[in-house]
Image (cartoon, rainbow, N blue to C red; front, side):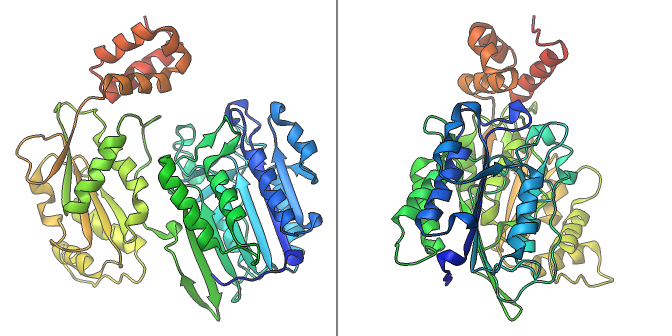
Length: 483
């Protein structure tokens, strides 16, 4: 990335939100506001003028001193104000570089749009910005600052709170003009799809934001802006040592005379139809996800089986969590197939036609011919096929890709005997993991006060996830009464 900018021609939109319109949304202990202030200070130390930095904060009561200490003008972090800054202030400026730093809550919709929640978000009105549309707007002729570095410390998961709504979640969408031919964008995200951005509440900082700050401070002061590839590699190395179950990811694009170069695969572009998670919390399966990763590295076809043979142990949920966590490894896409209703072959062909560019299916082919065409004409990159809830091996046999191809196959099945493929047998949770799940479902306070009863409930349910979900739903329906 060869990007040069003059500090006096550099602008910043810096957002830190820890206090929301709905108290339940608040970031306990804080962190995002402090991270935003520290990033704004870094910009000013690099000689970016104060008047070029727009700092938008929503601070918890116990962290209000940040506003007086930051030495910069602080504005509200509402959807309307942030949108006005973008469209009515920044869009009118002529400059070399725009930094956007955002720390706060985020999610990813079923349509794979990253959304960033604003300070006025509440359970009736999820005020948010559409990050995807913002990036497109910045790279259009409606925006005069040519180059952009966007750093986002936010989750990219599918929260239970919004399930069923996230695909059509209203929010601020920026409408772009024609694409510019002289722009560069570097986007550094705290999380891959499905991951949660962790916060160090004791130190009031996001682990990602802290790693970015340290990498920027270590970067050479001879060059402005710092080389973002080098910064990103330093951040990733730090996260490997932290083992926080989140992996920062980036993409970079530059456009010259209409040609687009992507020096790192854009995670927004990976086609998939992974279903939304049905689990309120996913606990106790980290080791199994790592085992599944190793099995798929060594084998073309792997099954997740059920030791109990009764169902409800979380086979599908494990497959969902693996697919989301490792989606970036499958740049050819993740195609999820389910035996209910339409046959596997039709589902496979429809996925390819809808999601793959330049996939021109020949007419007058039989279904088996269409499937064969898919194997030979799929887009480049490793592909994950998931056959979910398989009851009969003969169902999937005609639809398995050729051996040695770019396709990896993951099967979930209740069967635990007579398996033809390497498998990961899944059974009950450990007693500790079951208790942790129950605490997530019923609340830590209940489990702490009624520990022995909670342990008895876990044992009664056989430490099976679905049983714990059922007992938690029963409790909620009865107003929290279990006995």
